[in-house]
Amino acid sequence: MPKVTIDKETFKALASDTRLEILKALDGRKMNLSELSRKTGLSKTTILEHLNKLVEADLVKKIEREGHKWTYYKLSWKGSSLLHPENTKIVIVFCVSIFFLLGGIYQIAIYGIGSSFTTAMDLDGWNLLGGKGNFSSKDFQELMIKHAKEEARNKTLLGTQPRNVHVCQSTENLSKGLKLRVFYRDPSYLYLGIAFLIISIVIVSYLLKTLRRRKSILDMM
Image (cartoon, rainbow, N blue to C red; front, side, top):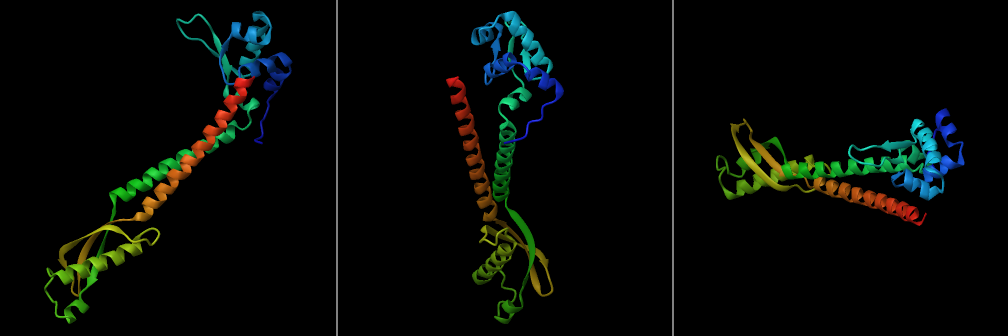
């Protein structure tokens, strides 16, 4: 269970069964003086006196809206954390779920945009086969794609087979090779993005289940 630190003012505010009862009554809901009076069986004057001390200790917040007759009260984060020490844990888990959600979207975006690199293709073997200068032949195009895919696979994040490989032949010819510009999509980013999104969904489902269970307990009170 997370550790809850209680300062001097908070300790004084909690040194009353009535104020503890008010905190429990406000757990998960906001109420006005009349509602708190009916809930606790105490007079409005008594309730207001205790509420002022709880507000001073930052355990309860006063909600006053212009044009509204009633003043409502609800638990502050500090007050809610005293009744539910797991609140901090819930916030941390929620932040982790957001991290995985954004990370998943980012990974999928990288996959969608694609990657590129420049490489040099050695033409010695091609020249020995009698293909010198015949760069437009089908065999050379296949050789060029094969070379590009091998290079792209070495550059993928998880060593997976690249997708949508496109090769642009540079006009700059090297002395013993050909300069190529290779565009491809790395499926590693897609797999990681999907995994991150699944983790985010699992975490959010856990949070919703926890909050639903808490609401059910409050409804029974």
